[in-house]
Length: 253
Image 1 (tube, rainbow, N blue to C red):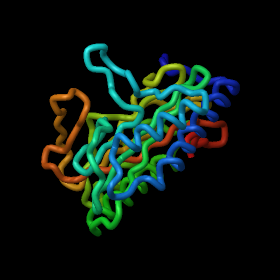
Image 2 (image 1 turned 180 degrees about the vertical axis):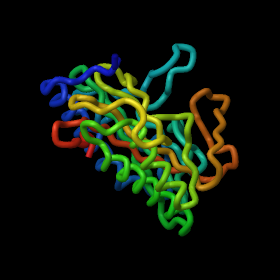
Image 3 (image 1 turned 90 degrees about the horizontal axis):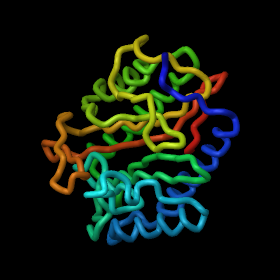
Image 4 (image 1 turned 45 degrees about the horizontal axis):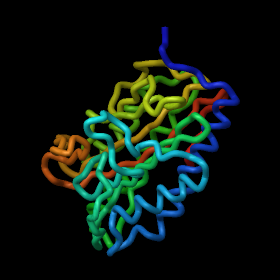
């Protein structure tokens, strides 16, 4: 028996609004992702926009009481894979930054990530960013009723590894709804025709993290920031998606 809660049409409509707010927040931030801007400045802009829309930043204060996440956005620069803390670091020409945004609106969550290039990046780094975006799009193409979770992981792994990059396995996509993290776990590697069968009403995130070097990860002492073991750059893209009777709909587009 699946533990995955299927969302009703009413719930999906609320999540559609939450997802639209996430997408809108990216559009607000985009002009400011440039050399000389601090991660904290981006974080403040995001929080202000989310709260003005009547929503709550999903990540601010999330996690254990002993070390709750201190920002509205996750700001993951260069070798930071995920959960980067938005501090006083200044963006520099040639950086990449994965901005992860989550909101809680009318009792439901929306969640997405976009990797921006800052100024002019090297050809190798641009290839990493393009491949990560392509891997997410490749995974989205297989989302439909009757497909399986293993098909999603297989699509990502095949594309990324086929281009010479590595896939982070420790951090995954997830179901989402009234809680930020629900069932199912959506892995970014996999075997076709295996895993949970997708049904209309399932809502989850797909959020591949792809590394320029090896797949190894390391958690820093702040208990949040995850970096690549070899200090090579990492990129991430994420959407929240709902399985529909005809295929899928991206809620954070």
